[in-house]
Image (cartoon, rainbow, N blue to C red; front, side, top):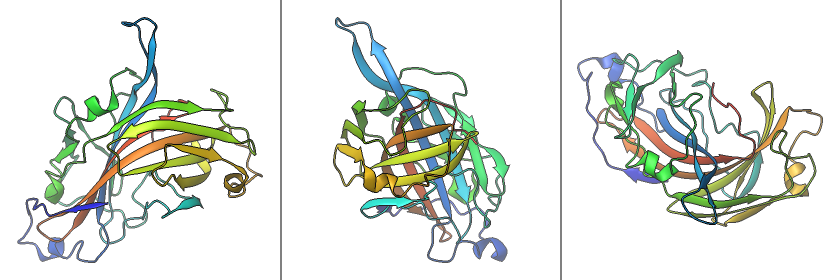
Length: 276
């Protein structure tokens, strides 16, 4: 994770109650720019070439001063139960002081983050619209905030590239079969972290998960050791697989709060709605 010395504007310096927020050591806010990809075709060449293009773009923000939930990857290997795609800001969630609904932009696109619950903001940018833009082209120089109080001006990192994804032994509708070995491979460039998440999903909700740090490798095998961390009693609608590349920065605001800034590109084995 990178730590940047960037001073964002302090809008409420005269209010001691506002100054008291975020004075602990933990991060206070987290901004995600998540691009989900699927297989696209380039028919301008013969033979046709296949590549990963964008089918969804989602921007989310959590604000929980001094009590932001950790979403750190395991240092190595796999960990059960991590929720890497939040739907709320947890019990410590609070709405951002002096901000209504923050706005975001990546240079070409702009939008508004709806306040779905205390401290949680979200925009499903494309909704049902799906296209085949390259993820790194869509993200550009990152996704930045405005109208977000003291966090205005924060920007997520640039994206790297993710290509040539291959997944063995899965069904495009139901995903992985519990206990069956699955080989995954890809090529990537310009990313700090790569991880794989096996996700048991029922009724659109996450029922169980195992998250594995790939340690910089370009391949991973879902084997018996991974399945042993899953709950075999759960009968999900889908056992999905997410291959995720991630770049992260952390910014200190001028009033001592910290915001983590995350850009992720996610290839889902089973393409389905994952919005809150």
